Length: 450
Image (cartoon, rainbow, N blue to C red):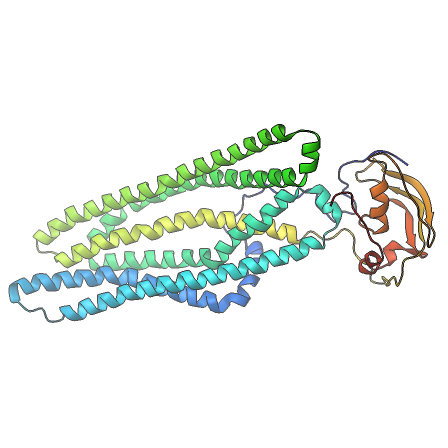
């Protein structure tokens, strides 16, 4: 019996060699991933529809209020000369209605898209947990639990945001942008074109920003995965840590990875802090241009004060969707990558499965090893050509130093792993011919780790 105990064995070709848990890069649009994610929207389509309706209400309010305010301003100025305020009350009531419509839309959007997100979260995490429970032990030998947890927690959270609101935000931001630009052009083409001249500068700045932001967010995702892995390993191995008096060493290691996570988040926060001032600056430039040139047109009698006021309000509303689209570009890319990582995990198949003709084991009696060889890694055997018979009612004690293969014998009896050579039989049946559930129901295993 060999005394070597290796790392991980990539046998059978069913498992990838430690899937890339740090892989976070993704396409902005990945039809294959999106097609598989869309299925999670089926059970929540009613909530999603109400949330989308709320977005429509909010968008209509955003578009209507500046126009109504401009109309009210013109009506008031006209009344200073004529004394006629007829129609102003109607405009005020409609404006209040439009504002209330926006508030109501925001409420429905936040509430029902929140419902949608939480239901998706529940469904995906439950599906992933059920899948993980069915994977073979070799998968967990190959992959750190903390990094698996990162997929179940962080990646699921990321796609939840994409499916619940991300795609809708892109659609409605784009539609709102087009609608506002169209209204501005219809109201006054020259002022509209003047306002739109700052858009190329914003697009270029946003394009450059998102490249740096994407790398920063990648580092944040990698850092939190490392922290989770280190934390899980530290807690799970606390007995070994204390027995070897490695508390200070482990604390130093955890502090290092935690500092990397801190540094990554600080850099990402700095980049996020840059974008809003940039948009505010361009908005101020656009507003100032409208005031200067629009004021000249008002003095020349070419446009009314209401048009100028509406333009000033539209300028601010115009840049908000531009910023949202920029932010969503990065979020969608991250979400597509998270979706790919989740699907990669769900596509991992158990290495050990029941054959179609598997039989039920009514009762476990005789256990026999016939020329069994086994190892956890290629070329390194833990068990070599083992022959062993345990008869009904017989008690057998197997003694050996650490790594001698004692636990491996128990793992092979319960078929947690496949033998490389020979066979293990229970009551004359090869364990490969038995259903896993019926075999494991007959065998009790008390592990050395509680």
